[in-house]
Length: 312
Image 1 (cartoon, rainbow, N blue to C red):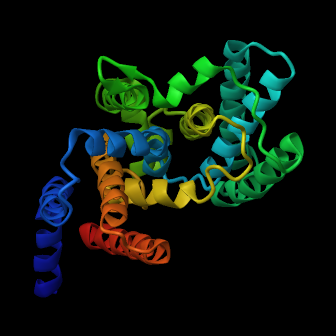
Image 2 (image 1 turned 180 degrees about the vertical axis):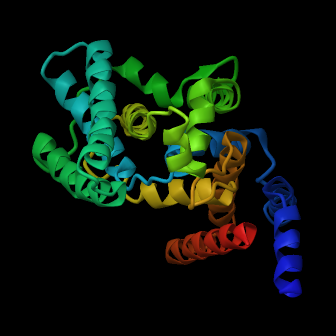
């Protein structure tokens, strides 16, 4: 028991920020190109779209839910806006419709959870498969390339030397940090995740809070899907395949508890950067792609163990 307590204290004292710094130093020594401005901007750009969804996923996990459909939702959203654009719908209107569809998909998961007691794990697993099929139906199994040249700015544009996706990510970080720390909604999220029954007895609409977090995450997945379609200049059915695991891993690595009630947006940002740096470092070091998948799997496993050790 003493050994377990000591181990728990040691794990709690380990901060991901320090591990990230050590990792960056190690990569800088092994890969000379790592600490260049261009590469660091590449890392920030590469994690921006998944990071945006990760902020919403943090809220979802804090309230004790999970969303496995975010990758498929991002792919579907990219295909949807491409399909709408192909049919003459102005891109601003198409983007609004796409984000609204993402919001409604998240709200649907919350409705199934609150009204029919269907776990979000089950609903989003069904959505994952259904949205993949819907994306294939929209595109006929092929990529849709119907965007004007300026559309690429959403993923590859710069503002004062900073990639536009990075600006979106950092703006979202500030917004969600304030949301969780300085608003009544943020306090309700932690209350519901910590003890749903106590939150209900204190007058909090538990179902509404859960639904709102899932709906917000659905909207963020749609925004990321739009940015992704700008990056590859097409709506592609499998463009964001596997994103859900990377996003959940980043959130857990950042310290959010799978049991609910614990987590921070800052920790998620660190977790997103950590996974991005790992991926970038493996590419610079020439590690084979199949080995990269093994490393990602080990990272997820280690993150879960770390999460459990913190809970002891």
